[in-house]
Picture 1 (cartoon, rainbow, N blue to C red):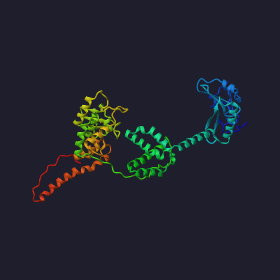
Picture 2: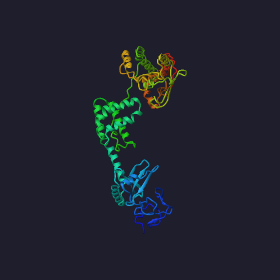
Picture 3: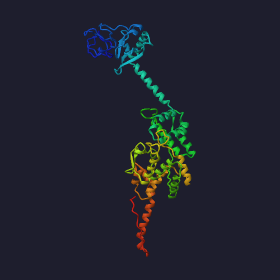
Picture 4: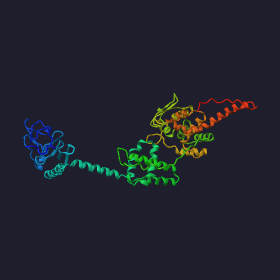
Length: 469
């Protein structure tokens, strides 16, 4: 008798008769009495015998019989129904019993296994009816398991589309911010809390448009907060790039911050004058907070960043070679920075080490979670007040140190090395400061050239030996 479903048959034999000889690739799943046993190809070739009788498998037993079936020692055991092709029960080594339905997708030929449900929740009669329904779907070219997977994907996509900007900010804070520098973390949190969440937080991510970003930008600009307006646009752009990452795919449209025209702001530059430097040095020496005074003194004498200085460990200081090796974990450029230090700096550090009690791995121990001091604002304000200096940030000490080097005729690459710049363009911000010493040198040279043309004896002025600018 020819097979009625040759396109669904799992047994790759040329014969189209209803009985095929062993070996069969389904053999490992079943127990047969003799090697001469045969498997009968039913209409779908999925009905398998539960015993080696050489006949069609019998229908699955009652619910009580299924509950009493022994569990395999390991893995799982499959028993097939002789009534509905592909319908069976799966028993695991843990004793779990579930009704399953095996089928092959007509369009792709892919074998699939659909779990109908637990034998504790489904009666065998109801599970058999469900298997018959699924069989009709498969016979019509359907893919029941594929339909469920498609529904889940659709639900996941819908869930992603319903994500709000608040959800995005929450995820960004939890998973992205910890990898950033402390100052960046603090800024991002404040910007999201004070500006982005109030303006955009309740909107769905995909509903945010460029006009929304422009409206926030204008609001901050009208308040005179031009720098904050620029930074918020940049942060929104970062947030939406984060949302579009392949790991999330919360957003697939164009970044709404792209194209928003920001202000072109000149960099803030503030340098200490010689007189201010003297007054500040005296004020720092008079501070009651001796630890903060030592930190500020190191900043004045090295041009280091305040974060690098506060995180200084004794193991980083080589007193014999007079070198401070800043590890990549503390530097902005994420690279080790080897900085020669001068006698005044060594004197400050030696005094700190001598007076430190109890001893600590940190040069400037404090109350931060890590153990170092991370706040000198009160001492800095007191020093500025005593020195009668206004509008000076701690970071401006770094700019002032650079301006002193430029005024001394040192080259920009050398200054960049002292400041730990990884890009020469960063150091170029100080290039204009070299104008004064260069103008002085050119003026003296011009005087020497013009002197012979006048009836006046030329005054010979000895130029100081300086490194080329």
